[in-house]
Amino acid sequence: MTYVKQVDKMAEDNKNDENFQYIVRIANKDIKGERKIQLALADIKGIGIRQAKILVNKFQIDQNKRVGELSEEEVLKIREYVENKEYSDMPVWLLNHRNDVTTGKNFNLLSNDLALQINDDITLMKKMRSFRGIKHERGHKVRGQKTRSNGRRGLSMGVVRRREEPGKK
Image 1 (cartoon, rainbow, N blue to C red):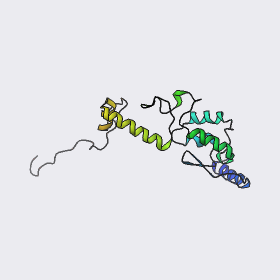
Image 2: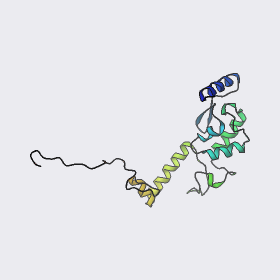
Image 3: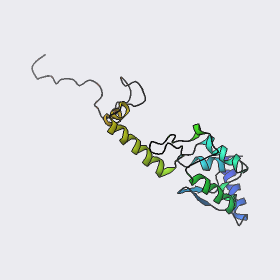
Image 4: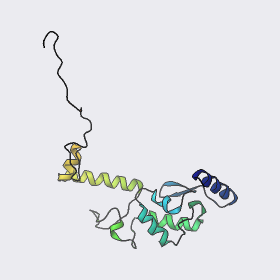
């Protein structure tokens, strides 16, 4: 069965179900109701596939279940847990903002909060004049990559030839 036929069949099944939600909002992101729960959670910026799988297992939801098929209570539980920054029962290495500079706590930030925190961390490195901060300022590679032949942007490439004057050879 091709993918298009599967989608059409799912759409027909969903039309028969009155409680199906086509759009579910979690962590300021609209999630399509036709997507499987694990992949839909991984679409949220700040949650990866591995973390989404742990969340699905934590709430004892079937992995093949669609987001639109979830009940209001299940969606509310997931929303409250995901939007809470501190995940106490997740392993620390899975969180995306460990050892916060001001509080020293471990957080898992999402969407806009994550982008703002990354920008704040970069500006702090620039102010401290750390090696990474200087690399960020200059627009160079930060994580030790080679720069001789890669990452050339904004520069003219190749060899520029001199113009020959007419009459001279």
